[in-house]
Image (cartoon, rainbow, N blue to C red; front, side):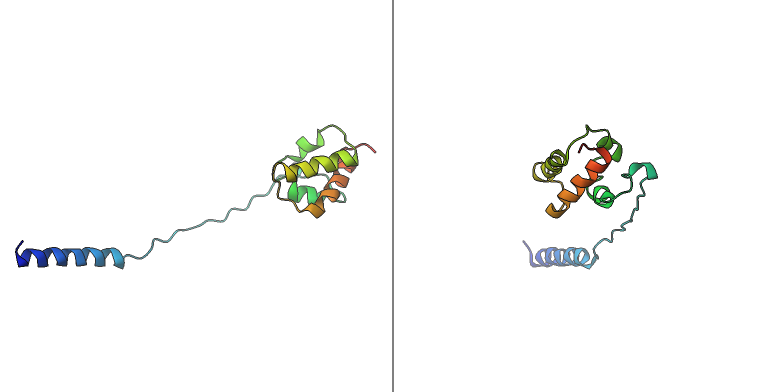
Length: 110
């Protein structure tokens, strides 16, 4: 290969590398979306409804939960514990009893 050809190829490589390096990273626009649930899709107000709305509505509709068979506190507690332990529901362990108590008040047996 002749010397001038080598210089030309080397120069072309430097120019190509410089053009690629000179490009700035692409910017990405991100939109924020806020979703408001209709009033009928929240649990009925009461002690513990905030826990149910915060933790249960991630996977379940309030209507689906309300239509479940009436369960005792121990049964609801076992169901809520199962949601966390088996299905990986992201709820803190200290909220389990509060949710179970609330579920008994809206759909439970003494």
